[in-house]
Length: 495
Image 1 (cartoon, rainbow, N blue to C red):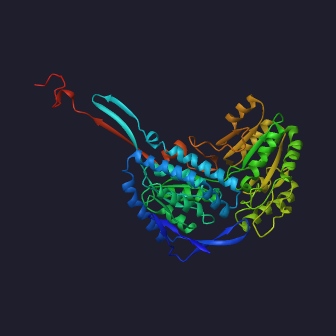
Image 2: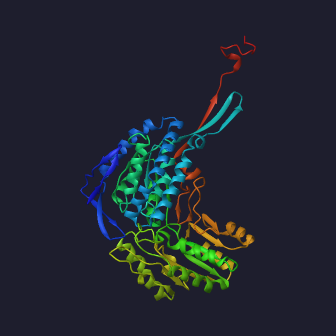
Image 3: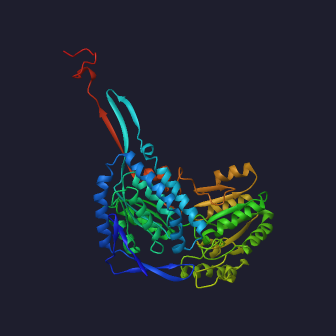
């Protein structure tokens, strides 16, 4: 089995801590390798390399930085299939899901290619006699990016292009469960012309994370993951003077009104709930059926679930792959018993789905008549379990969503423009879809939820990402009186 090493200063670097973590192929259940886990001393060494590299990188002209990003973009297009294959081999999602992940990350690279325009400051002439004021945005320095297992390529690309284009150096700490995509991205950035040391990949667990959070030379931290960890990262990082953006968990709802297109809503529910085996922070985990749409909607979803093909991600026929680990699969499956014991109706039990071999598979599951006091409703399950909650009225559905502690994403399916417009204004959620089940913003906007789905006030990528990775500086300049200039400007000379 191969051992994945750190990538520091433009080259692979073997670990010295003596600790490793296993890497599995979730589709087979077989251990395929291991990854080094960094010690605090290894984190310190990587940060020192990044500090030295950043000093030179911040002085590189914006046009040259943009050229590097354009080259990265071309390399990702060229090696997209390779990236998707690595994602599928270590995460388990289907190749089509993995290719879609690469494509969404590519959009963020393309956005960052416009860095000469994105970093333009402001200017106000003659604010007082002979006084001008202008502003500029400067890089933070060295930033840490801590990314989750469920999108091992896309989430790093939410962070890296903007952070690097703004003149920072980066320590990327990917999930130790599927770190291969991050190493491939580091290789791509280096080959595209990024100077060694500007992007470094250090593998690790909580030991590495906690050292990054307190390291005096880390200026900012970007994180995507679960709510408890996001809270810890935000509190610890800010307590040590760092700028922190920490995106947490989710419990995304999809409201279906009685006038909705039933087939469109059922298709959307299935793709949004079970794509990537439900291991998405934007997955729909609760359908709120309003009025008399409940029974026909549940039946339409059931018919589609029965036809869903579950199998290895590299099989083109597979529509849903395995979960990331056996432990996570078993945890997700345990919610089916919890739901039934609490009074939910099991419409489809994914445990009856069988796939040959020892992979970490769980079929798509559907629970009806779920109520808001059940664990299956309150907890972020992060797997292929879709719950259906019944609401008598639109207002009841809206109040239910606004009372939920998470506020990440939500969708409304309706043909009524008035209802849609009211919903987008009244719902207290950061990202809203109208007849769109997974409302992930395009790269020119920014990604982030409300309440327990976000700690801090900075969303990911887009314009907010540029602001996060830079500090604003304002310069006030008093110019000499033109009449005193050594050059004859036609003014009367003072006596």
